Image (cartoon, rainbow, N blue to C red; front, side):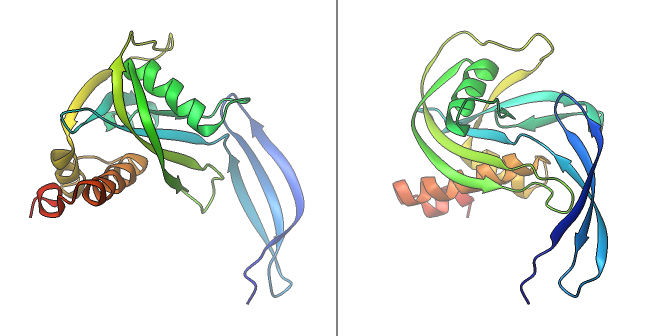
Length: 189
């Protein structure tokens, strides 16, 4: 099987500031047709910033769709004209006041591939220094430093619900283990 669906028709349903929604008719591999609803999104970036004390910088903020406060790594949507890494550096500074160094990619995450085209780029960096936080006018959040080992435990204990944060925390822990050789310490075993 080729597992490919060819787009035959596309109709815009909604176009907003962040997302747009289309209804599409796709031809399946066996020649039949199916309706696909697709949420278009510019993509995002998430930064796992580690301090010299092996703490990750987190933000705690209200997330309207869930009507609850979530604990997340600094993140944001991609802005046109900037690379994902440039966006990540900007978001880290805006949300936490931190400036990173030694950035490394942790790959990409497709948060909900069944209906949304969003791709989130994940990065790791070491915190170089702190400057003034530069929050957007509609952004309210608290910055927290959490030891990497505790952050891993929080992911495994279901205390961090955000998928991009879970992925970046666990990938950072694996990277940390490779770089330092501290296998048992981070896993808490």
